[in-house]
Length: 312
Image 1 (cartoon, rainbow, N blue to C red):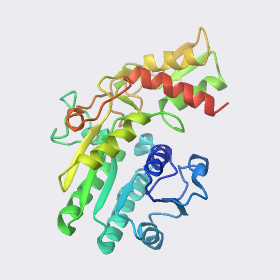
Image 2 (cartoon, rainbow, N blue to C red; image 1 turned 60 degrees about the vertical axis):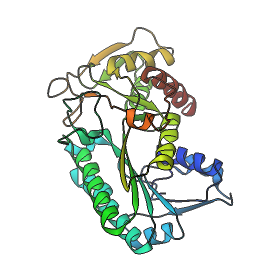
Image 3 (tube, rainbow, N blue to C red; image 1 turned 180 degrees about the vertical axis):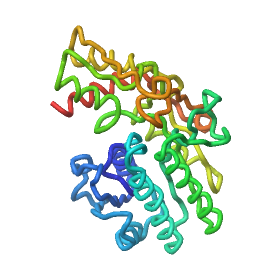
């Protein structure tokens, strides 16, 4: 598994080992944390390799004897798109190409890839289904994920392995160290009287709890029968930024916090390339038996509690 020390990856590691799978994690720790997977150090079913997808020897070593490769490594900061596009190209596209080359030479027959809802850009159809077209990402991050999907599709077809791609909404929960909830908490700890909010506060998106995400990923892998399959993974509703801010303030026990909206760009977006409205159609995965346990608001509240508890 690439990126297994990260937020989503570490939860996937937990789930796989609890299912008695042998797990090898490759992570350069640029975004991941050893504490996320430290409970498994010394476990007979777990191996950790500190290495980089830009190093072919590290990749080859990590996938040796693997049956399924989960590719989660990426730079998750969408906002970097407008100021450092090369980071997304190298850490998302080139890294994926390097992994695919290693898979081609190894003969491994299954790959799971975590893509992003940002591949849809400003979709005109909401909820947005997997077959929505044309895909027109508005950030370099979204473009890098779509490019990675295209490479995976081509390699799967040409070299005869199976690939499952998940287009993720905003995944939240314990161990998350980036994103809106974490950012709000950090800002309010510095100044509990005022909260700067990027954009106009009306941005509305789907937020999915990490537990629902992991269950969906494992179910899709088990039930998918296509050589190349794409699934949306998100909640069935959305929540706006102002409501998220209110929930975080409530869970921190603060009162009379003044919200300062930056106004944003391009009609109230948080930053250049920010998709203002995002809600995925998840009926495809639901037909396979996936059931979502939390709404977006419930996921935000539970995740806020978890992050606050972890960062005391």
